[in-house]
Image (cartoon, rainbow, N blue to C red):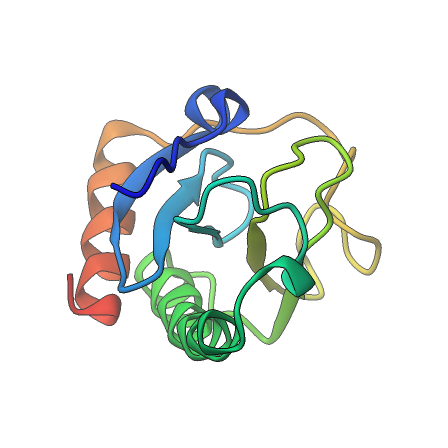
Length: 141
């Protein structure tokens, strides 16, 4: 697979959803927020400007697709999304990845960023199955 390896930081904090043309899609393991992570499967890439132009365009398309999937996830969990946050930070995990986070004015961190607020809440087995199904359906995986 072109030398790509998922950074070890993702395994304990997220769940694999599936693969798009460019990105591995992961569900952040925090039931407080509808939250997906896109990880472009390109080795050694830590910033957007490291991607070839075609991959940058593909990443934008996949971000928009993920935004719809996050909205579907919010609906499935009976917490409709009213605002989407999209960020590629990489300060803690250097591998390029994009967070797509559904927000609501009554969520645990509103209006601040989600990072460092409270403790992650795991999905129940039932909610995790529902979440994965909603996201996979929205992404057509």
